[in-house]
Every structure is written in structure tokens, then in C-alpha cells.
Length: 72
Image 1: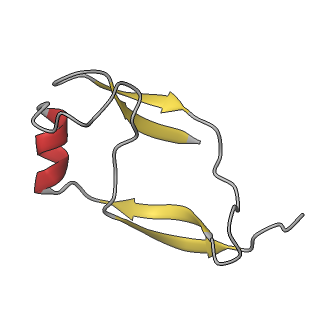
Image 2: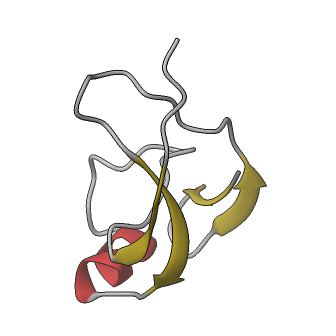
């Protein structure tokens, strides 16, 4: 899947990252259909949150369609 990853203040990249998997019994996987940017995303982008590390994935404002999990 593609994700927006952090690489320093004012430097983000869209990269291919591994697809998520089901880890817990109540996990779901979403196919994202829409997303938005909020104020905290801008703080992250500007490097104002020191806990953000290179390669961290941005994004927490989204909606999507639940996909049927493949249980193994």
C-alpha cells in the first residue's frame, strides 16, 4: 500500500509500505475512500512533535470501507 512517511521537518514522501494484517480478533482492514488533514498533521509536518521518527506514517483522519478479513 502507499503511505505518507515522515523524513524530517517539511519533508514527507509517498512510499510503498507493507499491507496491514489482522493481528487481533477484533481488527479490521479498511480500503480508504477519503482522507483529510487536521491541525496536528501540520504540527507533525513542521517538526513540532519531537517523538516523530523518520519513516513514521502520517494520517489519522480518514474513512473507508471495511474489507472482509482473511483469517489464517
